[in-house]
Length: 132
Image 1 (cartoon, rainbow, N blue to C red):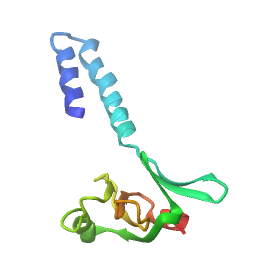
Image 2 (tube, one colour; image 1 turned 90 degrees about the vertical axis):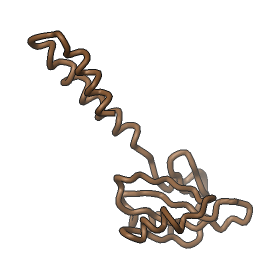
Image 3 (spheres, rainbow, N blue to C red; image 1 turned 180 degrees about the vertical axis):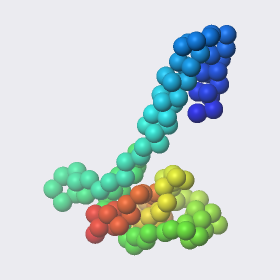
């Protein structure tokens, strides 16, 4: 994204001396950064839909807390393994590479084909506490 914005600013810069030469960079680069941050935001939270009905929301997906089994925080080399060779093709994955830890959430619903979720979060301990 930043490379595309830089190229667009360079095209607008070509042939314009003075103030107009650096103006595209000043205007377009921050706009590109804001757009990247906005596109990279994904909400991971435990919400209450009604009386006694709580559910985990991760981006567009949701899972009732009553259907959640074991929950583990995975970091470092174990994260690479969990997202690589050990990953089940039917698992729900919401991974953002710039976020360190992931949380592996077992789904105990027998009617759900998804065996578990793997969700990136900056505050895994808070998510674990909210799921308990």
